[in-house]
Image (cartoon, rainbow, N blue to C red; front, top):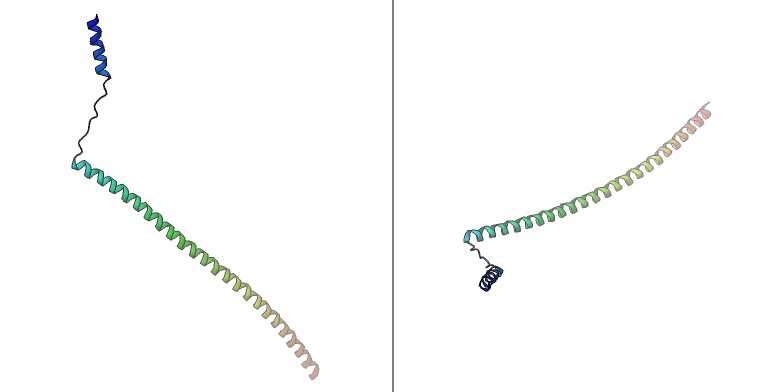
Length: 113
């Protein structure tokens, strides 16, 4: 029995040993493939950053144009209000002129009658 128990512990010791780490050989094609993927990922990231910068630039330009448009609209509204005021003054001056003309007409008719 002792003999059989020694063999069973021997088997257990053999199975408890850690497995060897298998190293894979990396060939030149694998290295090139990995390098290409890294370059592709870097290009995608760089392209994304470029597009984001371009988007920010265009957005800033549009914002400037919108603010300039708003300023122009405000100036046009102010000019329209000013022109409306001047037209009202001209209308009142015309009404006063009509009144003076009618008064002068009445005075002339009185003098010549």
